[in-house]
Amino acid sequence: MLIPVIKHLQQHDNGYRLVVLGLTTAKFTLNSAGIESLGFLDFVDSCLDEKALGYGRELTANLPDGPVSRDESVAYHGISFAEIVEDLGEEEAGRLYRELGRQSFCPIRFLQRVMEQVKPDLLVSTNSPRAEKAAFFAAREMKIPSLCLVDLFGLREIEWIKTPGYATRICVLADQVRSAFIEAGIASERVVVTGNPVFDRLCDPDLPDRGRRLKKQKGWDGKKVLLWASQPEPSVHPFTGEAGDPELPRKIDQELETFGRDNPDWQLVIRFHPNEYPVKMSEIWEVSTQDDSLYELLALCDIIVTMSSTVGLEGYLLGKKVVQICTSIFSPDAPFAKLGMASRVDDLSQLGSQILTARIPELAGTREESATELIARQINSVLEEPLK
Image (cartoon, rainbow, N blue to C red):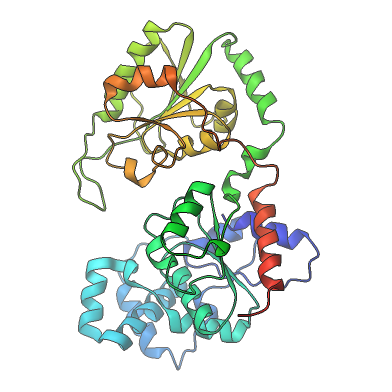
């Protein structure tokens, strides 16, 4: 989400000096994008943090090698854990870490140390927990303006983002998300709709033509196209513990196949999730592989069926009809129907009728300006405001 913004600011001569803090695995991603970044290790004082680094070596002793250097991982874990020890003592800190793992981290004082050295005029970060959250609390204490970019719906993150003074400005995906944040008690002037730069490719003016060419190439001219964005359904929700039905995706296949046979003017397309083991489909289906262009497929289709896949959100942003099956344990985590972005199905027997009667949501459609440009404008705006 941040990489397009960083590149935009780097490419425009606006007098900004960018300092990028790439925390743990983000550093590898930033490097791959050609963006230099700093990490925890760059701000460690070996004498001051000697005990913290000892904690870090203990906590990372059994971690497998990965894209994050061992020294950076030691610094991140050790510094973060040491702050919990300072606040609660070793015994309680150990209990919290055993229970929550890295979710227990919120190294506010360390991020204050970082900002004392960098001396930023503005903090820009996302709604992620741990160090990003700590950075906003540190900036608030140091009276540094900040801009928080919320990637999707902020369903869980809103609990800490609504803290008074958490961020100077909050950039959200859509009007529906803005309304939810305002209802949570955040002043309306602090919440602005910019969209998410991840979805800026949807603004490509050539996308509709590419979609039409693909439809012709597939031989689907004269047909309506339904895209079923399949995904695995576990037996238990990993966070809530709610019981799920692993056979639900295949039950949806069967219901849609019945619909397709009853409505031969429709072309059924299934796109399996990358983490899903594809099953053999009947001849009525077109199976879209991960090598196919998802955005071109979205551009040519007439309706998207989903449980909670981001594909449903992307379809909404493209101005497509979306039908959400709300019997998945993950459906509440992606409230498309609740926010008016999709038609709702609570019983699979309703699926066929909802497909035929679904309408394009009023607020759907791409924006004239990209999210990256709108966020850059908010950066300028916050920097120009007098400090309150």
